[in-house]
Amino acid sequence: MSGQTEPVARPFRIAMLLPTLVVDGVLPVAIFLALKHFGVFPAWALAIGCVPPALNNLRTWVISRQLDPLGILIMASIASGAVASVVSGNVSYRIVTDCVLNAGWCLAFLVSLLFARPVLFYLIREVVAAGDASRAESWNGLWQNAMFRSGLRSLTAIWSAVYGTEILIEIALAYTQTAATVVAIASIMNTGATLALIAFTHRRMKSIRIRYEREEERSWPL
Image (cartoon, rainbow, N blue to C red; front, side, top):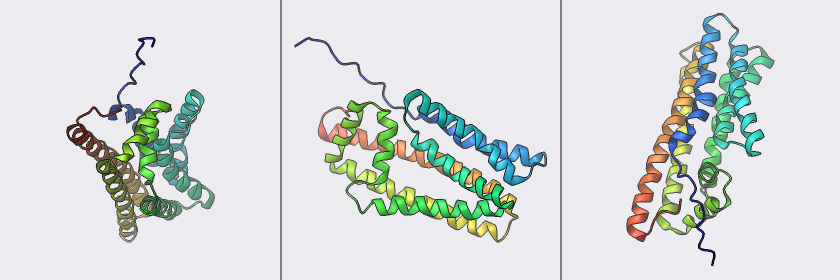
């Protein structure tokens, strides 16, 4: 036995996600609103707003050869609508594609509850493990705990419900507001909802960790 101790991985903090949230979530909305204010056609303003998250995800891939699931989730929502709007020349298509994409995420989270492990289990693992095999293994081991399983499943259901609610709100807005206004509101709403979900998930997981350490009488492995 060498007596050497393995280095302890840096504990996960929600602040680690701030660069991704700012670049992939806040900046595209700010660019869209600014360009729209200066008279840029909304479809092109959407397309230009996709540049920061695209570059950020490319940077992540170059550095770690891994994809950022959170960044891709946010970027996919923006990019799909931007492409449809530019190709069609009508920003209204952004509303349609946004609803379709949100419906896809809503169903993905919901249907995953029928499988052995919900999709949120894998999304959080990618963030928490950050490419560290030992951390990923520790995360996998937590699935043996009933409280952990229940928490992940309920959180997955909540994510699904939020995406479904966003669709209903966006459709309702489409009947009372102009297409450009709906796109602006929806972009802010989607980013705000994602931030709220992340904050709620982080708080819920922290609560699960505290209960785990109290009931299992051992430290949380991550």
